[in-house]
Amino acid sequence: MKNKLGSSLLVLAVAGLMCTASAAAQSNTSGAGPGVYDPGHPRVNEVNQREQNQQNRIANGLKNDTLNAQQASNLEKREANLQNREQKDMAAHNGHLTKAEQNSLNRQENRISKSIYKDKHSK
Image (cartoon, rainbow, N blue to C red; front, side):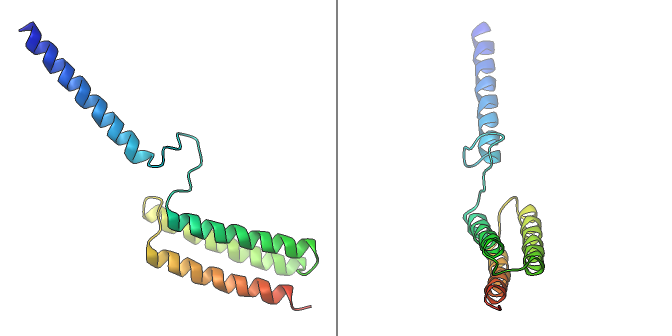
């Protein structure tokens, strides 16, 4: 009797640990650990990299006077709008972007990129 009870408790304990490990693996797929920034999905990484590159282009334009403050402000607003769209899209899909959302965000990035180029070369 004691042996059966001990075996049952052992099985329950192992099952509980397996459920806990499974839940932890699902909530933190990259293994980055709690409190560590994890950009996640490759589509998100690609969009974020483009945003960062364009932010750098805007900053460089201000630094070397190829963009004025008004142009930079307008471009920054457009980038912020794009980032808000990305966050909403990611929230709808558990932190990921669909291929269609990525394509839409990339088209918007392309338009902003062309504007950066035109504004920097309009003097």
